[in-house]
Image (tube, rainbow, N blue to C red; front, top):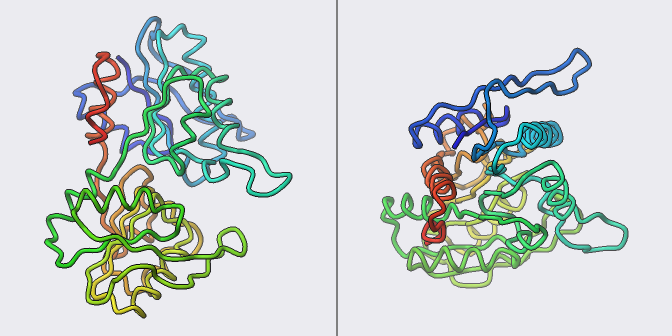
Length: 309
């Protein structure tokens, strides 16, 4: 087994390698003078079980192209099996034709990964679990819920209610609420345009409750902060948020700072931006051990399913 890292999230890759008690594989990853990506493997990988760790974060287009070139290099170097470890799977939000003349970008991503040379994909909290069906290779979709739930239990919140920020996330929130033995509420939302959200009302009882808004990602934080306002109007007592992927585009950090959120729990699938690092409202929970254990089991050919419990 050999583990290599792209440039998107080197700290997570180092943490995963530390859990596995191995060194990261040697490679050179830089750019030509015109900005094109230059990559080569600096050790023999023939017949090896190779894992390439790369998130599609920040400059997603650059990092994905970097990943495709790395996969192609390992394929041409005769690696035995190549697993693309993608903690944050970018381009997952367009997974069906919600209107005429639009791409299904998640399906295109699947095709590109397979063409580049991936024999398997390991990811976390896909925006839509059915994206696994776009692949003709094995896909393991880990969940951050166990890590986040274990931390929330330490807060000893009273009268806990888990809130789904929209109807699409109800299934995810319901499983999370069951894990915490909490109630469930839903925010009814209409989205008139991409990245523009309008909250209408809260379905469920949240008055005098400690609530946790649970979602797979926080991007512009528009949906999140409008949800916080709606929950406050309905009499929620303490409001937290828990999101796997801290994308935090645009003025997301400023919106969260101005909101009534006490804390936003995120994982390290994406490195936290500097503005968020300097904020007291963010707390990062590590998923390195979860990915490390999944990688170890895939390498050994043992069951990964218990990691979903």
